Length: 286
Image 1: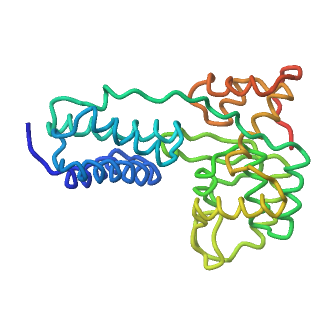
Image 2: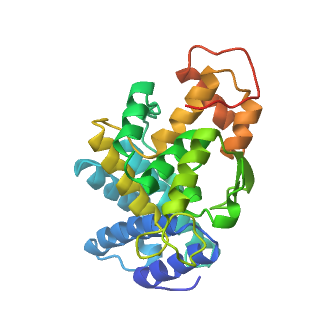
Image 3: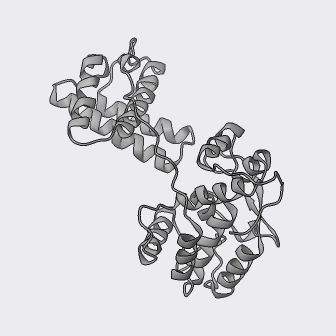
């Protein structure tokens, strides 16, 4: 077994995640989680991986719970910790993995938030004078693509009635139908888009790519302007799914459009859509 300081192992771990082509958000989140764990262990005067015990990790998680972290957040910290310890074991920095002895807290997943027609029409109305945000909202709502996929769109990905979605964070590439409402919003934005050589569809006024975090902030601003409470950007994707399940679009078709690896992921939404129309393969506008 090789020896290493926890702080050094932490830096190697982040590089390991990057080399494994994990998303930037995953690298940042896991990095912060492990930094919290190491800070706690250092308070216990433990500076090398093999010094930490199952009881130490459980004490760390108990501290988080006392500080107000939800069971879901604590569970995510356990996943981060296990990934870290797997890295340590593969690199022979430890022989035993105490993280495997720690149990996940039980919790229920919250039902996905779906906007009703009044809400998404109010959102659309709130953004009507902003061509870029109107296009962002319509694409998320009418195609069901992920926010990261939207931010990654290139001009060359836009076709007359489809969007080409490049591979993104382990999600496979696919083509997504582009309906009339989405086409019109996108065309209006592209005609007003800054004349810059940047390949990304969505750009800032200075011509730089419109980043995920900025897209999220902007959409949430329009949620507030439309007085839609408790909604997040991903709820536009949930709304797309619910709308098409209600209108009978087949699970196979919908799963492919959404880029779900397993049809069971799409099936989970059925419990939130009590009424299904006659099965069809045709997508409709919201």
